[in-house]
Length: 136
Image 1 (cartoon, rainbow, N blue to C red):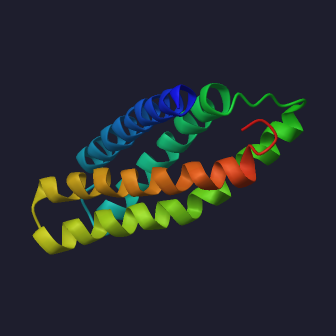
Image 2 (cartoon, rainbow, N blue to C red; image 1 turned 135 degrees about the horizontal axis):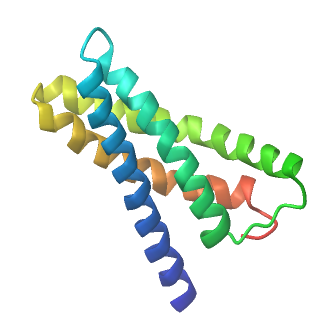
């Protein structure tokens, strides 16, 4: 049980770190662009930044995955990203729903946090089963 608790705590910390960067990038995006589709633009850039951060942390400190070549690392990143498509759609849907329902600025950020939590729980399971299965 100690091992599972350590993984859960690290994964939670890394999710908080990636989510924080995601939200920071979204906030910055809203400062530069507030036109049509601004929420989707912000979510895209925030997600992209969060993806790179979370991949690095998960690969090295959750699954202890060591690639043998840059080609293998690239394939692993593509698979990791592909698994993230489903969880990103879940996360974005929740964020968009919060924004649409409450129509106050803070709602989209609360929705983002709720969506990120739901997405990361799902993502861990997908990554363990399909992406980092040799080492996880």
